[in-house]
Image: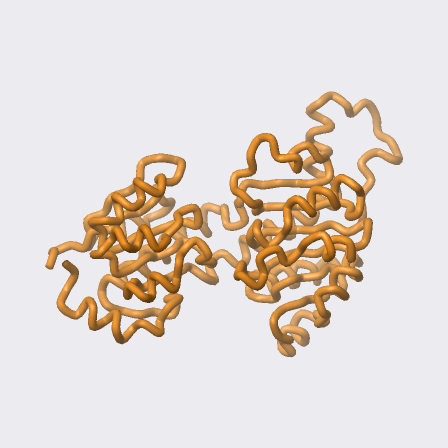
Length: 337
């Protein structure tokens, strides 16, 4: 049994997370700005007891098979669709995540994208930089009002609810759709439940905050986009694969909807020749919903704390597969090899 567990971290992290890990672990950190390749990640994982990963790191069956000493993966994200959870559980590898800490910061960005798309902020900035601003004009850069409009929220979890609170300050009517009704949220937020088709048809802005699962992949496709108002704007800060990107491009190009604002795409990053990049009526940011100094530092620290807890034999509330706890504890009861 090693005196200090071996941990591999797939990117340099903000704040004090790495120092926290180094107090009790042997820590290796991937030095590049880009993620490690699958081969590099498998090689580093082969000798590791714990991994601290990002959404860009695919923890699949091949990697798990190549890492016989691995007992814990801490994913620095709310979601974990980059991890084969079933295979991790089969191999008695505990998976944790970092929920909660990014809620308010992500909601800020989602509402900021809504405003940017509605009021054509990014387009206006490009217009000025290109030297096209010659005078004030009564018809230059017109866009829809946000105050008093109807906002449709797909997925009224923590982030969706935080967006609803911001929308209330703009006097917006709030509709939501999810797997089940939430009476308390309806009371607290003044939100009304609607089926997805009704939400899409009635909303001036639609913002997506659903988890990516096999059931929700491609949730917004050509049929759903056709239900939206021609004046409507779609915002996605959840996962790129929730939206059929080809169908979205066609809806934006044809004027079937007025605009979109995306912090997530499929793939990420978008290739330089993506047709979306040629459209003026879409705002695209590089997956920065949680990118504040404070939030990313807190996410990194929570990911480190989750990993340390797992390596110490604890199963905290951030564990994704707690059902394996009994067998997992039996696996590590003799110490890390």
